[in-house]
Image (cartoon, rainbow, N blue to C red; front, side):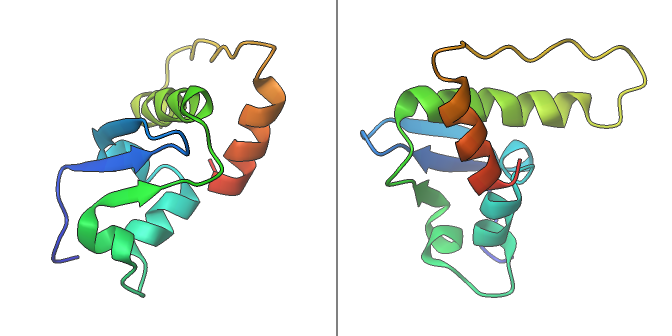
Length: 101
């Protein structure tokens, strides 16, 4: 990974940009494959991924979850509940499934 940086930019369908640590981002299997896979995707060169079907309100929850997963991975203490607003929970679950996280 010659172009690896500490941060990556995730861009929502409505143009919002989320700059997060690469270590958090790769907690998503889909994002990891785009950034670190054997095939060099444009995203891995630019360190930016645009999601045409994910709105900012959903991508915000995904980013918070990726940090949550990174922080508590391998934890031996009690892990607090990750809360999602009931109005968007279905869309968040479908997005999480797509992103493998």
